[in-house]
Length: 260
Image (cartoon, rainbow, N blue to C red):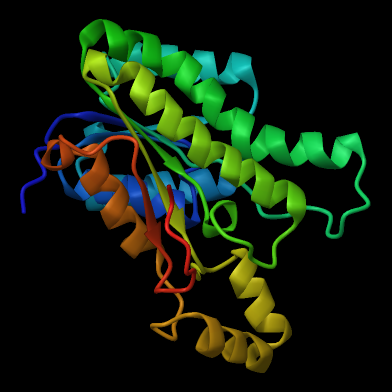
């Protein structure tokens, strides 16, 4: 299926590895021009080089930046516009499930996790949405998590931050729909990739992880970054032109609740 992404500009935050990298590659495979971002120099350089070798190097723009910082978000967005013009698709993918467990938490424990998993997405919206509203087109997709939808064994701040992402995206969609801008989110379940949290858990106790997946996930396997990426690119594209305010779960049938 042609998703109509040729020459569109896709801005993918946190795209040097894992799910973000797969999303960036999927946009490139559909013919889009893609902004790749990351904080660490080596993974970013490796990803950029791989993309430029596989695709037209003129369709790959790379920025090393900490997009949890407002000034850096604004700078990278402005530099993107200076090179390619307006951003058509923005994907808010910055996040980390690393957080202090338990309920005895202080304000810093909460603030750190919310800053990474919630406020980073809000800052990207602040940078790209006004021009999308003016142009009366564009889409923003958030990467949430099933921990924000149903009770899952995850740290409280992380679960709450992802729940905030889901609610924010749904309500934002209602406010900007009249301007032709679509807002959606994808809530992945257990996604396995090198260097990710599940990769580390498998290395620590493969048998325990296997029992968990077999007992909790209907498909009895991990998901892949590419499976999440395919969903994200579809939602961003004009093939999903009547989809906004949605939170689409991609978890192999793990959770039982349905997003409201």
